[in-house]
Amino acid sequence: MNKRASGILLHISSLPSKYGIGDFGPGAYRFVDFLKETKQSRWQVLPLNQIKFTGTHSPYDCLSAFAGNILFISPDLLYRDGLLDKADLKTVKLPAGKVDYAKVISCKQKLFAKAFEKFKEQKQKDDFESFCEKEKDWLDDYSLFMAIKEHLNNKPWSRWDKKLRDRDKKAMTCVEKELADRCEYHKFLQFIFFNQWQNLKQYCNNSGIQIIGDIPIYVTYESADVWANPSIFQLDRDKRPKGVSGVPPDYFSKTGQLWSNPLYDWERLKKNDYGWWMRRMDQNFRLFDIVRIDHFRGLVAYWQIPAGNKTAMNGKWVAGPKNDFFKILFKRFSAPPIIVEDLGDITSDVRRFVKKLCLPGMKVLCFAFDGKTKTNPHYPHNHIENAICYTGTHDNNTIRGWFEKELNSEHKKEISDYIGCKLTRSNIHTQFMRIALKSVCRTCIIPMQDVLGLGGKARMNHPAKLRGNWQWRLEWKQVTKKATAELVDMAKTYNRT
Image 1 (spheres, rainbow, N blue to C red):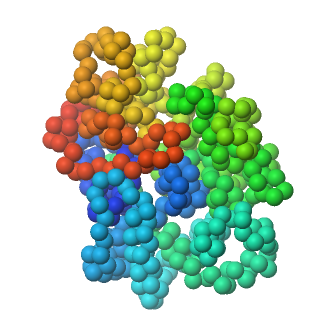
Image 2: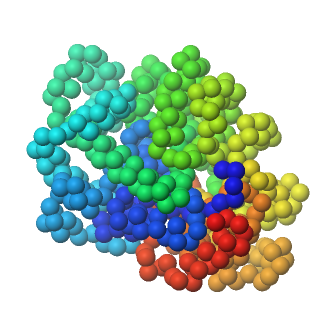
Image 3: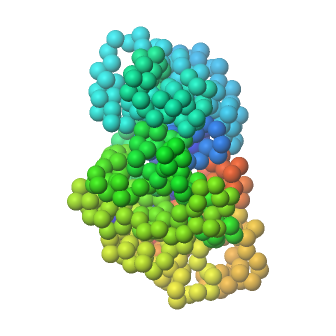
């Protein structure tokens, strides 16, 4: 990340496809071609981990820190590989537009079941067996976890029979035999997921494009990780969380954000040189070219909320692993390609620590323009080279939506005066793209919604709101010649090609 470069933020789920959600199929390859055509060299995605099929469908609330989201498996590629018939694809009738998760899950599960039956008929499974052996450290636990959940009608593991909940050896041996076929099914889906992803990543890299991935700092309580590794989390004797995750009142919520993930037992992790975390980092360095650590400040100090609280207001800051964790990380991985998500309630000690590590943080333009021109690091004149400049993130409104709905006339005038031109709903996204791309920050990332100048309806996520998120999808007809030409022109003008 030492050269000037730019790229686009677009999650896999937002890609165009005919299966109700973006996937690793033709739409993804076409998007890579678009990136290459517009002189971009970075593609940032959100976490690829397996999401829960109920609830918020958030990629930051995952069932596994290692397993991939099977909804991103491309039926078109399954057909190409002989695992589906044309007739199978013709049965798919899903609406265009926003992701309807219930319909997508139902449709894809039927297709996956057919693909698995064909897969079992194949005699050559060397690649599959090699994958299972290589990934068994997490794959065996994950596949069994998913098989048991299915068998028990999706009942949370904390409510399983005590012997299964506590992983009694005899009970585990028995259930492994009973559910062997379903375990193999879940291993098969992970095998397909990682094969399709690695092929797409190779296409990106061959096109001169690096992928920026994202690690959610926490996993959900009802995850395979907590079930399989309860000792590394802060749980009581009944395996219930003692405290949960979140952040105090901030820009997005007056009562803070209550995420409710279990917290890590960092002292226990330290005794094993943070083995679980190091394996997690190793996998992500293989999956992506650059890795963003979400909520980085949680590794320095985390907000601990008593379990059972209904808001995040009554928490307290507790010291994280900080120096010791990164000492081990840098010893194991030389010069790891990491981006620090340093947004929100970032105190001076966190900023000093990030600077000490020499890791690039984030500068977000819609967090600037608050009048604090000397101290706010998001103002363009306060940017530094070792940082990533964004117009906005997946948690923000689109730039046009922000301008239309969140700013008063006085604030709009302040920004217009700063930029030196009158801003309108039709030019705000172009002007902010220009500011971001000419920033001194070596890397610049623009959400696809801002490239296209879309309004608030295209917003990806509303933090602290549980419904209506993670559904926006791109349509190719939105990608105009004008938007494409502007992106090319700016990349060339600001030396980011």
